[in-house]
Length: 155
Image 1 (tube, one colour):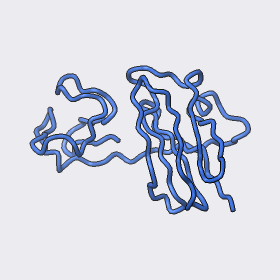
Image 2 (cartoon, helix red, strand yellow):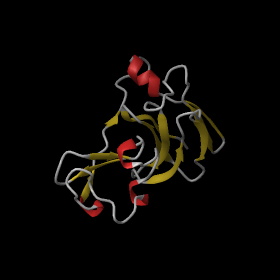
Image 3 (spheres, helix red, strand yellow):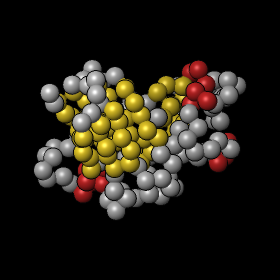
Image 4 (cartoon, helix red, strand yellow):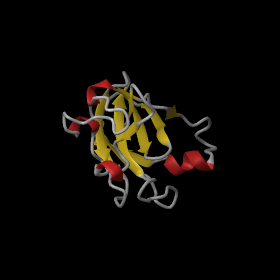
């Protein structure tokens, strides 16, 4: 996620390493020390605002653009398990451009489970969907925001 200082233009990004502040990649905003302040205007951490997430939905699942195909997971459902992977052939796996999280949401858009990935890890895993009638799978890219590629309903 990204957090915007409420007084200036500074944006804290949990995925990107802030070398000037010696903050490592994947340091969650909530894990920053309580005495964290904006490096430009000294605004306290409590006064940062969560940036709204822009979710990209494919226009036509049968004719994905190259950009959509980079972020589209290959998946299968066996019994009550959803297995997925994002092929590294399609999506870059670089220090500042990689899939860092895949999340499962229910039909009320409540987060059910999430898997986190480092830049060198292949983004593939599984979710238990035993108690879900409907779900949505969202792929989070460190550079290109969020892609929602599966909305499913099964009986």
